[in-house]
Amino acid sequence: MEKNTQRRRHREEDMEKNIEKNKQRRRHGEEHTEKKTQRRRHTEKKTYREEDMEKNVEKNKQRRRHGEEHTEKNTQRRRHGEKTWRRRHREEDMEKKTWRRRHREEDTEKKTWRGRHGEEHWREENMEKNIERRRHTEKKTWRRTHREEDMEKNIEKKTWRRT
Image (cartoon, rainbow, N blue to C red; front, top):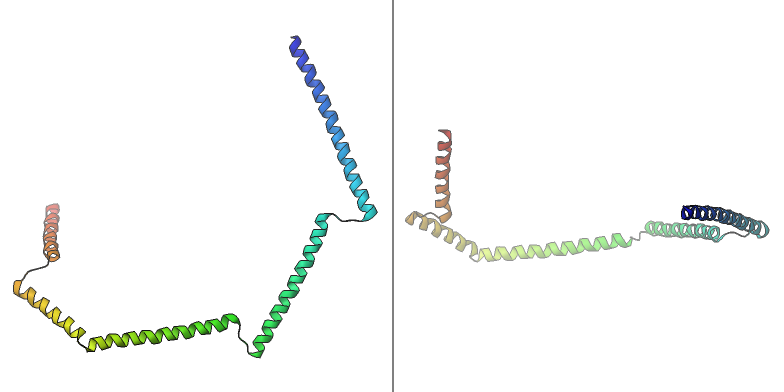
């Protein structure tokens, strides 16, 4: 019992000490803020944050001015007939494309030249040979025979299901 009462007493003392400390902290904080306000009143000095804000406002104004000057220069160039970098390079790209097209046409001419020199003729001959081979042997390709077999099986399955 004595230990419990002793603990309770210590706890109460600690609580009172904490309350006193908190009061002191509040007083100290209030004194601190009072000192700051007095300093501001006497010197009218701004905090670092306020100074930074003003600097940023000035910088933004300068940026806007610079941007406006830049756009004015561009509009003057356009009035005089100068093209923008983008437009100039786009036209160059278009020229390259026409060069590509030109070379593509040359490739197609080569192909037709090859065709003129018998490539198409040989292709036709081979086709005819294949057709004749099929006629003579009446042999179907592996795929055709198996496809027909599968079709027959499927028909059988369907008739089996119906009945």
